[in-house]
Image (cartoon, rainbow, N blue to C red; front, side):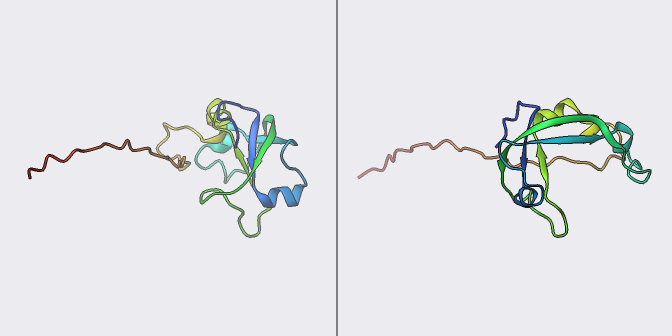
Length: 123
């Protein structure tokens, strides 16, 4: 798993590894879409994917219920949370635009503290 505080790390899917012959330790160039392409209607005007251009080191290969290989696709890359945080307009679009349909998903593990109860039963 990538370090969520690192901008230069990414995870890839198994199919990505087989299609592009890149795995853990290799680097991948990530071309983010322009801010304009991330606006509502931006996709219809054609994606302009050429800035910013970032290099990320592949630190993991895997899948999850939200990240898996799709039929007919060549595999995927998961950007670190820090990369998304540093380039929000290029990854998530404008969060204040009511027409923005991009959303984040998360899996959260909750830990419940156990309490011990004593019985005060009378005999």
